[in-house]
Image (cartoon, rainbow, N blue to C red):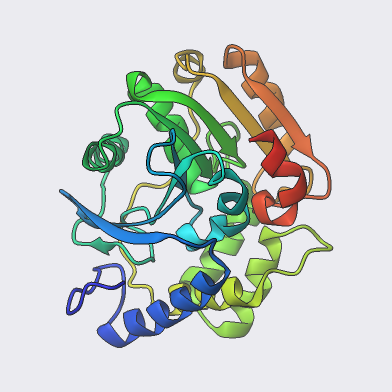
Length: 287
């Protein structure tokens, strides 16, 4: 489903968005069925959501990584929607099917957007799984809105526990200044483990997102200080691949264990940044 004649401000043009939607719909051929595509209204635009599972089951929300859309969760939703009512959300401000009309400008506005989505879905307290930027947003919500979360899983959260390294910034700047198919493909390879080849549909989706993207300001992921991490009270699972490229995964896990009370943290062998895809058979049973 797409809202006719409504183009997100995150895309250069209607043509760019239509090309992206075609790639998104290809990805949906991998999505677990049956599912429902729906939109909810927020102050920042209409948020697109893919819903699966029993409507009466406990709610589980997914927040994706930069440029990858809600569809990146296909191997995870395949398993977890058997036990939960899952909501894979296209987060506002990124390149996806959400109709963004105002990009959040700070962490507070990110939290407001999440709260508005949960309220629209009539979810009082939620379980959240976030990867990369979605993991960073999830951790912020754990800090700012602890009363709204049952438990959370952080998969390779961007920044958060360790500063983003030079490798990450070079990768990011490649997207920004050289948005060509070949260079994007080379940069995307950094997201996976060495022996993993990204699904062609997802690769095409990310290429369409980056090539069609309209530069704009947003909230960049940042390091949380010790006091913020010590304020986390909900049960948290942290999973990071041992081939993570955006920071040192061992140091990130060590800091998390030191500061977040009761956290369970594991280093996933032979997994890169998008570890839910790289090692779905290992990650899914842990969630």
